[in-house]
Image (cartoon, rainbow, N blue to C red):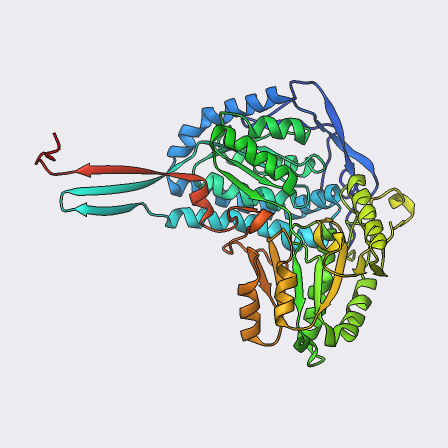
Length: 506
């Protein structure tokens, strides 16, 4: 099936020429009076105009959030859960509309947004709606006359900065626990993908009290900093590259507020020799597991961008994998037959091209791809890049630095010890994959890899209820799990003495 582009006759998505910020339950023009075009990566042509806001707009959003925070924070968990479930229902009801909008703006194939991004976004709201109902305060008996009560209280108003690679799903990851815990929020969408979140506000904006959820668009360096440094926020959550994450952490430290950081990765995907012990469905699944480096065009922090293959199966296994890579269909992101769409921006294309050139300079062998793709017609100027595989060694920059595109770096290993050593030879620690028919080996290696999530005989599954976050420079905190409610809450201790006897200290 092929969807018509947003705004075209027959499309499930309408497009206004210009959009505003969403503040206090209303659409508000930016105080700057300035707008910027939002480009479709498939055509490099504008979709619409979005606000180019200034710091004053952040202040307006914080005014609205602070005016709502007491009422929302004092709502019962049942009331907040009901609101989150309504948001989930609305996302489900508008799944096709939101999926087409996100795919056209981000470039990811609509098959992914329909099957993964939007269903998962709805499910995360339902998960935290359930989790908040099950959360309990605690009582500790100090002695027979002294009791310590512990209550969970919302932080108040939080700032959340969303990445461009999963604009709606990452928004859900951050919004659901924050709102469930009783906080109000100001969201700053990524500069390349602001429109799809504004479409989400059209769907869910009136399901929450005015001021609970606010969206301000604008340049990351200016608006993101204005939000992260503001003394009126109690926490900042950020997903993006590690360099910016360091800045966010510095900003938060100035006000001594907590942060959640989900940053970069250079994830190893390990294939032991026994995966090729039989020509069966498991082998086919392992091949797909390697090719998943091209999922979402490689614009994934956990992208399995380093494939480590046991040397005794390298030729046979890679032969199958390269055949599968060559079969990846690039094309219109709104065609459900498309497997890979365009990169999100010209900037990403330039970055990918520069890294492929660096790999060639360092002696990496290009096994497939390595060029920008020209699809012709209306997609001639689109930001398409061929799925690429480079063979080299783990000290090359293409093995050590995050490319954030459909580029896989492949090398071999002799035994389990070398596989673990290569896997851990990186500054990052966000994700990893282990493929083996030997359950004991898979368990040992999974525990030995220094990464926050290790997929075992699978990859790129992101269910609610499974904690997600990184080791080392890949971040702080664990999203998509009920423990995130603790990150968006503070504990109040009420220590009560029921006795009448003086302490005798004075």
